[in-house]
Length: 389
Image 1 (cartoon, helix red, strand yellow):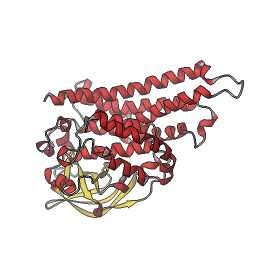
Image 2 (cartoon, helix red, strand yellow):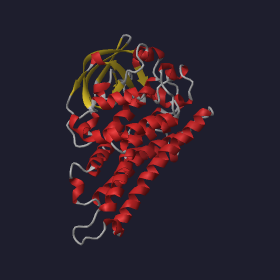
Image 3 (cartoon, rainbow, N blue to C red):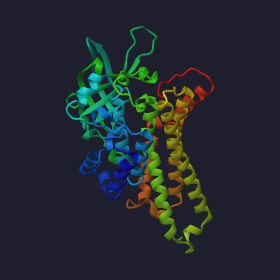
Image 4 (tube, rainbow, N blue to C red):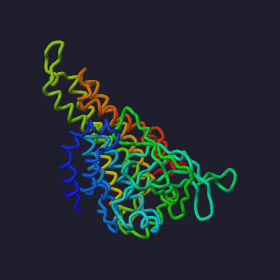
């Protein structure tokens, strides 16, 4: 699978995804047709290991695909991005866990809910989990889930061990509580665990990932799997926002060409204030897009050469991802405000873009204030206090 062939498959689906966007919202999850097209086109396999039928494409190609889909349907882009990244994350797990998920069927998918809101207890051979985990995007179509948790430290005063825990569908229930104003079609429902045992080999250590010594690295040689966990995951929730903003920009451009001001009948396209809004929005979202592609091009160049990716560069990537979402929200805000009263009608894609991009910005991983601290500490030579890069 070449990058060009993969993107051609994505772009062939855009007309249908655009037409289906209102239905996706009403369903509060992806339509079955959309999921089937994603599966049959192999879109989830972009970052999956070749050992299990994946393509091992560069993240830049995958996130270009996510942005393309985001131009027509933010929820579809979000689910592809989040679930697609989990195929990369599973490659970092121990080999036994990978074989358990993909050994018989490499098309099986993994959902997630990474905020450590449930309880974790260490027991012989592994851990027991119970509780509720929220925001599990695309969970209706996944057969496994990765849940975040903290293992309490054995020594008082020491920080707990942050890990992810991999559970099969039989070990959790989906609570259909996804009634929201944005990203309505992402199906990001709660997962409820009553009492589940997770063996040690089905866990993923954030510290090992931060130190680039995840056990799966011994199994897959592609440079793709030498990239920092935090950077790959960060753009998984930023790329959809960039795509939504690019779609809003294209929609605004076309609408402004044919609009006239009701007050005086003048052409909206001739209004200098509208022109400035268009230019401002374009600069913001194009900057975000170019940073994304540039970040992964730089990191893949270093990984392919077997060179270390400096912590300062990793921290910069983490900051760029959060800032990209803020830039995307700014761009859509500017366009929505200049779109006139017709922008609030539900048949106008601008209003969906506005709602979706703000739902994406609300994700804790897209908080630019917190990610600015990660970046600035690295720039100032201070030790990291967060392993999310």
